[in-house]
Length: 182
Image (cartoon, rainbow, N blue to C red; front, side):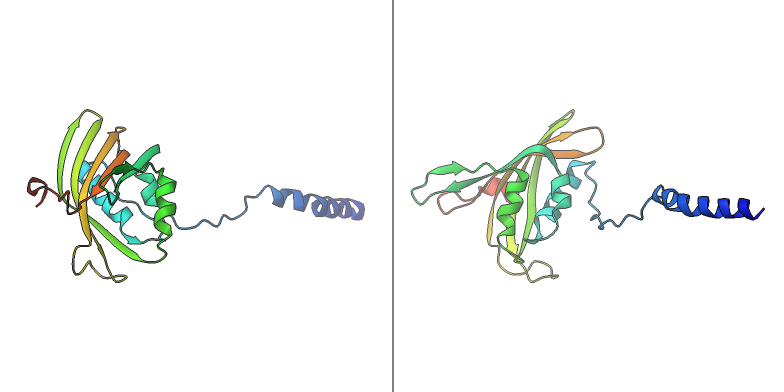
């Protein structure tokens, strides 16, 4: 009997680590920000504003989720001589460029949107305005700039995602036309 108990005790001691190794390790995961739904185009516009606005170095998980993997963001830069040059950015390229502003807070809001859509594709022509704002406070003060976004989006049956945003800020030579203002 003693031999049997000793054998069982030794077997348990030898097998216990192997049995514990099969138990799943507790997982520690970072909190994923709750991203707004984009089942409707007006939700997509609100989600873009929320994802673009805030501290420049904020978590961009929701921003990434709004775009298809190969999406492009294309600001048109106007040189002093009036030459227009599109700058092609990937989603990560845009995030990297914005992150260089550090913790500076930026706010963008679409003030007028014209939508054309059919089936699973849409084009949103939106007038935006930008402001800087103290952290945690609503936008205050003067509009820093405004311009037009040309947004193309696709619907996968559940949500709208952006495939491209092309935009140009207004200049004294090219002000936003009155028909695109609220």
